[in-house]
Length: 302
Ligand code: SAM
View (cartoon, rainbow, N blue to C red):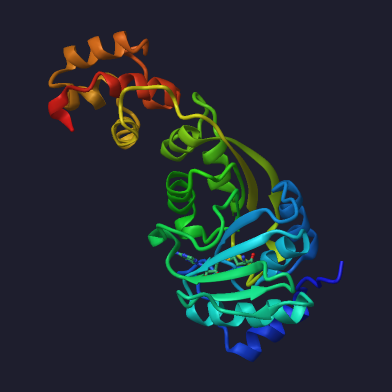
């Protein structure tokens, strides 16, 4: 393939040339290792012409890997310096693309058939409500650590066409996202992610593949869209019950939910109807269980 990936020397040179100083607040740790990039792309099951959305392209390490696999990439980046640099970097590493920005001012690189291979959206991913181009089928990203879970949940919620995702997050966050009910790390992220997807932690990635080197290891997480639980409750109601159930981890569910149902007795009755043990704590209830509980919320509680 004629695409060249970024290695340590290119990353350093790019950063120097553009005056990029990676910041912790934006979770800027750039991948220096082509092997890691190709592993992410492989696990993402990217196929030619697949519309893929990437959050936080940074200097373009993963973007180039996605383009190498012939995906069409929409990249959402919050940092204006990085967003401006990206089309230039991609044009230098993927032959045959020309700049042809769209009517909304997004930087676009097209191939000789006019196909948009890269579109750059300069925006906070949490505020993105619509994306340019064909509806995205996959989310592939090395997510900024401080907002990884909200970005993931927001994208799964807003972009129903996403069939699957492959994201790199902190190892600890990966454990929480993929945790089954009853395990030590099961919590709000696990329950909410399970509303949208089947979640698996697929690999550990050491900190040495990044510049700057972070102080924690990372991991890859694969998400495959599932039908949300069948329920008469809204997603908001179910998530509110999840939040309440984990707000005080030590409390039994019937105590945590008593204010919602008006009394401890009413909560016990609702849990019984929902088929959830009244002695249980949030840690043991799966997303379907939370949905059955939410269905029984009195109309006045939300
Ligand atoms: N994809 C690149 C790579 O693998 O080398 C960079 C990944 S770096 C961990 C995270 C990237 O997300 C940075 O480029 C950062 O500027 C960007 N970012 C941070 N917060 C963001 C947000 N709220 N919306 C969009 N991008 C964000």
